[in-house]
Amino acid sequence: MTVAASRGGVPIAGSVVAVTLSPMVSEAAPAPRQSWRDRLLPRSVLGLSMFILAGAIGAAFSGTVLYAYYDYRLNKNEERVSKFVAGFDKTFQKATDAIAAQREDAKNQIKKELEPLQKVAVEGSTLEALERKVRDSLWFVKTVDEAGQP
View (cartoon, rainbow, N blue to C red):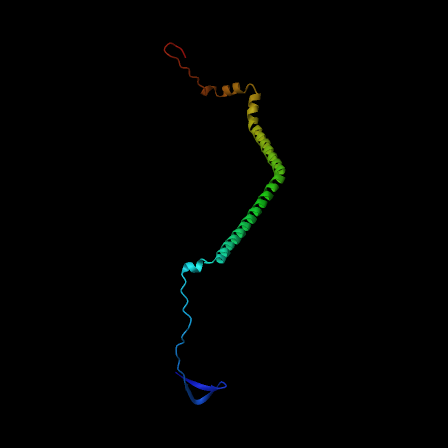
């Protein structure tokens, strides 16, 4: 391999230096390749302790989060129940008033529909007058058996 020489960053014209590269020999032995089990699971007591501690911290954190959510939902439900109880008397009174109004309206409608029938019932001769009007089209059929019995 040839390399151009330079002085102070300025190349020197016409100078060529030959450099021979030789492989570097390492005195240390190559590191053994670790298996996936060695990478994931610690081997020392300190490593195992840290692994257990990390798990405990994670469980504590998740428990705290779950309890906070439970407490939030419990408070929301208690607020809804309190709001319902506070407005229950008012809502009950409105419902009772609405039912009473509908009942009175139904009674008035029934009375209105019964007025023509009540006029007919008040007049006692109404049935006799009706019979006189339709007498020609009125037929009474009596059936008797061979012995003359109805």
